[in-house]
Image (cartoon, rainbow, N blue to C red; front, side):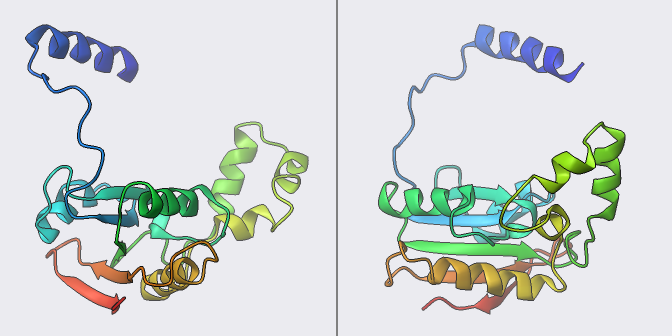
Length: 183
């Protein structure tokens, strides 16, 4: 079981006493926040490709680096990063060959049913849209990044002078492509 494995490691970690710092710095070194995809390859690749060290920026991750709703938790986190954590710039960084590119939710909906989620529960999920629309991916990663950037820039609570950049990274090479230059 993974939980037990992690807790066992934590006991050994604590016994070694190698973690000596208490609370870390309150603000990122580079005064920026990055919204990026939850793709596991980006864990190591993105900081290396951008020349970032631990503590340089705040990272927010979700499926596809997508921001669709003005009142969702991603926008809330971005606003907190700007107003409380001194983020002066926002970077939305997706990646080429994202699995959300062309993603259709039918498989997830079927797996929900197998797990005991009823049609009635699915239909009551949200008053804003239906569940299938909410789960759907995007037609092109580039368009998804542009949409996220526009939704952030146009948010009524976002300061107008906050640059919002959109980029795509190639997970094979680490090459970055600018989609939107926020300056």
